[in-house]
Length: 274
Image 1 (cartoon, rainbow, N blue to C red):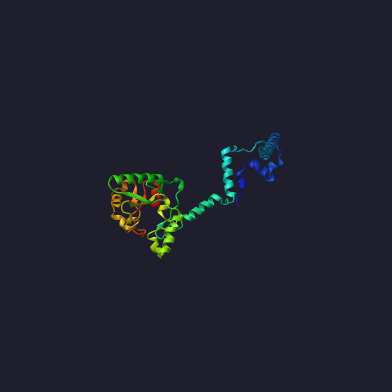
Image 2 (image 1 turned 90 degrees about the vertical axis):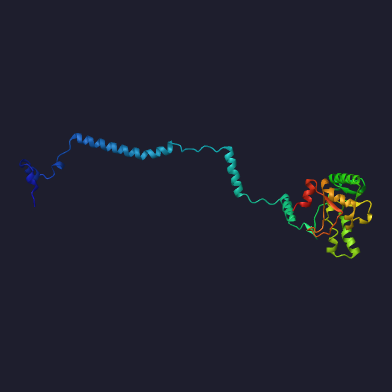
């Protein structure tokens, strides 16, 4: 084994051999003691600051406060909360009525080839000057008056025999005459509409006649009269059209005397709206 004491000067070998730990036997100087004391004090002071700082920050420093919500924001939050927690409202009478109307709108609007029509307000009707028993909506009546006058000027004796009809009128024409003549329902429907399904209920439909040929009143033979020929050539200028021409898709018998006014928005929607 190597002897590391050979590297130590000869003057110090004996001292090292006899006193292996001279630094521990030698007392520390005063300056060293003061330095150690200062270091100890500083260490304790630092530890105290580290331990004390969090507590002072919790006590002395207030937590940040978020800005107060504006009135609109508060109202919005309240509305959202109410909508999330409120029970669905019970249906009121208005919504019930609306649902009823919707269900009614799905009901059939035709019967035996005839469309359903509401009765016109009788207070809104006016009589035709040539026949006070015939009443129509004012605009339609005015056009009929002009047609009668213009047809007469052209040599045709155009006149009217039927306009607005009540439910009672249509009851007689459909059910009573059907029974009197022993007709089937389908056969009667080809020449007359059931109550509630006649264009005459609207106040916009009218039956024309030729004043010089009464035998053709409400007959197909009316098509051979001067009055009908005048209607064919001129009725459209006054807003009138033939309701049931030959081969109509409603399967109603050809009625050359039965015409309807379609010259304004109300009448157009009545007869053409699905």
